[in-house]
View (cartoon, rainbow, N blue to C red):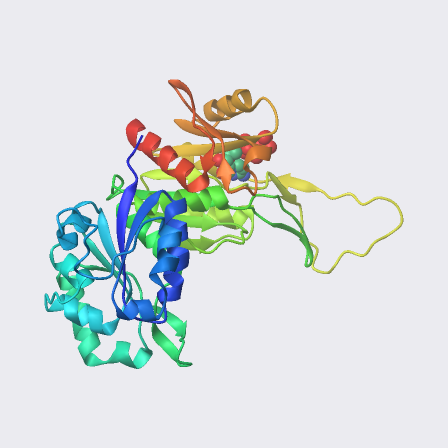
Length: 391
Ligand code: CTP
């Protein structure tokens, strides 16, 4: 089993400190161990007790902690960490970092580190726009310190603009990406996700229950692994994955068109979208009025996007998904052969649709590989690793 990643979370004095309580919870859920270190001023905004309760570990604030065996927390703590994240990183702390100053435990830790340093700035928009801060921001990049954010929006002081710390979920996405080996660097991956909506008239449509979660998780995992990802998304309620080129497709025909416009230079194509197999022969211009008796809708077959791509003269490596309600492996295996796919991912509809977790079986020419039930991001990573091995 892979060892959990270990993060030192350095909290400096800023009102955004309240957001890192949630970040610690999310990290632990994502199997990232967190050791919290706070500056004295951070303790004015959130208590060490809160952070200890959430991280499950004693929090360090001062330089002279006798509980550390060798009496050198600034060395010992960073040697055990895979990265240090400063969140929130105040303007003052960033300035201090860049001058190599070490007058408290957190700044000393940063100076003595032998692991990557990540910072999530948080400050008032005037402070952020100040030329001194902007100079420091440029210097952070030159010193190869990763900067997450800042975001734009309403600030605690009542002003609106750049300088807000990213939200906990956004920070977690950055941290996960940072910890993921870039096994798909220089690869281009095109993914479809979500449900298509086939209009019947201006207010009615044929669609399905796909949430898009599996396709979005794959797009995020592929991007975290260093790929250039293009996501063609049908209907979903999901926020766009980060670091991914997004296209929106309303129906099967537009999804087909956007895929064909983007497929020529792709290394991998993954069809996760639940594309409608049929759409109305014609879309009524006006709302259809009810009448006595039944109504007959005439439907035409839509093009199979995945099969079209897989049958191109020089196709990318094509991966399909098969959501089945019965005879899952049998039907999925048939689809793999019929559509000429090197790999298909089979799942049972009830255990997959709309859920955060999934249980899938990967089917390729060497047989079936069942993956343990897991959250969709972890399943996505396992699928991408399997693709990498096949490539
Ligand atoms: N797919 C596609 N274009 C379509 C239909 C499906 O690209 N018009 C892709 C899906 O993204 C998925 C795979 O094909 O990767 C699903 O295979 P398919 O046999 O089309 O599944 P269903 O539509 O569920 O087929 P059936 O209704 O016959 O079970």
